[in-house]
Length: 186
Image 1 (cartoon, rainbow, N blue to C red):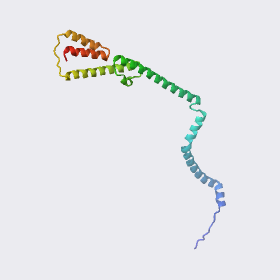
Image 2 (image 1 turned 135 degrees about the horizontal axis):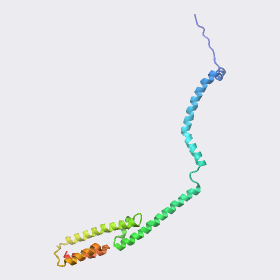
Image 3 (image 1 turned 90 degrees about the vertical axis):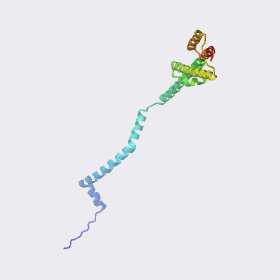
């Protein structure tokens, strides 16, 4: 037997009618929910954080114009105070370096955060500079070929060595060192 083939044609109206029924609504709702959920997640990832941030900024601005100006003025004032402090330290350092006979060209490198640190830095410079200068003078005198001979004035040499140890400036130390070398016959 031959089966009877029947062709049923479904129209757009039939589909619309089916989708309006309870069974059709269930099927359609599942697909719409899936599609909507995916769209919502994509939108959240791309836009939500930016919109929330903008709204929070509008309702609770982080800084008002006055606060911004105050902050800017405070920064300028702090910078000016630091420059004034540095200039004051530089002047004191120059005075101290001149008094001790140190090279004033190097003063900028020895300015510290405060006066005591600057003084400590200059004292260190004085120590190193004096040692280096003394070594250079001794080396130059030894290179000239003179050999020290025992001196008859040992007490005077000891006195000069004590003065050298107590000398405050490099100029004084150099002058005393030169007297010592003359006495010793260097």
